[in-house]
Length: 275
Image (cartoon, rainbow, N blue to C red; front, side, top):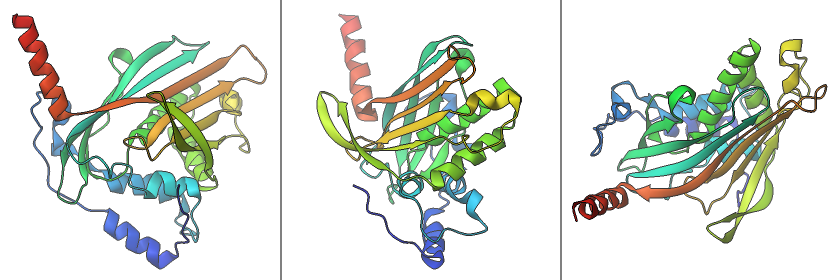
């Protein structure tokens, strides 16, 4: 389980300087996917640092919440030491829009000598697809940030509000949230886990157009026994004035396959088709 450590300003700055490492671009591994072009890749740790600290520049964090440590400090991808793909299932249920089920794939294209990763993403398909730039130098699992980014854009689209506002409220709330111990079941096994639950808009004066998000709840479940550590992310909205108005979105870990396993599977399928 996570052990909290007090981090003074000096140590925190030292940590940031270690995290922000700019490394060379990688060529795609055995793929013709255009998303694996790293010429415009962003630095993953720089992105994660901004997500975790942008709202705290004035005070610079004397002691971080356990939720902040779990999401923005811990190295989620440390146990993955070869090119692999992490698979997630995304499901949306809504009374206002079409329900759908899709897939999210986090593709670790290359593992560098310092165990940082080059990553590309496939976030849903068709009209629901969201494009995110590749990342280099990744230590943390960026899938939770992609979920938040898409969610903020979606709230902006549906309300006419500003995605920056939603993003800011989420970050502020995480900074004040502590983790809670829980348990998950995966592959018929019960595994120790921890969850981060928060409602970023309950204490915010929202305009009428975003009032239905007043009680929106986020829940993240993580486990050290899961590759990439992030097991499930879900949001739930139920309008106070209209109980029949609800939206639920869930992103859940499905499994991991190494690129070697995928190549062997493809080779076998090809051989079977030739018989």
